[in-house]
Length: 292
Image 1 (tube, rainbow, N blue to C red):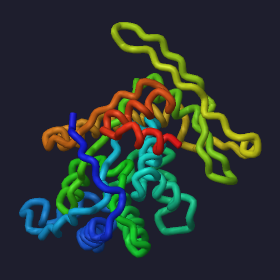
Image 2: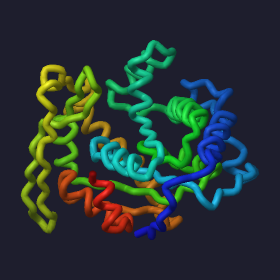
Image 3: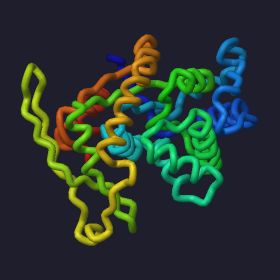
């Protein structure tokens, strides 16, 4: 288990995000988004020639959240983001925003997502670079990345331009993951996320039981609840299969560097949130504040 040192909530610089954004942009600005085979690996990945900027002594956290689709990365990353005062950047949200836009990638992304396939590195990096540039212009500092990196190549790019403090790998039984994904609902008006599934799995064969209560929507949102087009059993199972296949090298990448914190979710938010805070070495005062 990685040991986390508390880092001050405030920062006087946005150099982390600025450096990451500019380096990603330079590395991929001339790459066709739909071409992976012709892409040349940036030189700094093999030669370590990119000059790293000096980390400010007083900066915000730079964390990564890993985990299968539907595990709750966004929920926990968002809570910690609000408490620590750092931007929560979810690549899944960036993809969905692009899907709902009239941009040039929308039709290409729709086909990829509805088939349960993974979006290419080039598209993800392009969307992330655009988001980082927008945040840097507003003075953002630090980050909690959710859904990036998901490949060794992405992890190498990230390591080449900034120093990730901690990688939190959220884990949950596959049966619970499937039920959670199929129970997800979104309010088409306010964008709120809810879940109609009541998960109650009995412990057996040495595995602990798990209970996760539904996350009901408020009355005004109920008539507007919709299900994501890709939240079907076939597509969800395919997403989980692909993720499990590709996640092992990324987990080992960070485990070998002593940065991986593996956290098994014991249940829903009421059960998991305080235990996650404890695993992150947040003291009692922080727990009370963060849970508010």
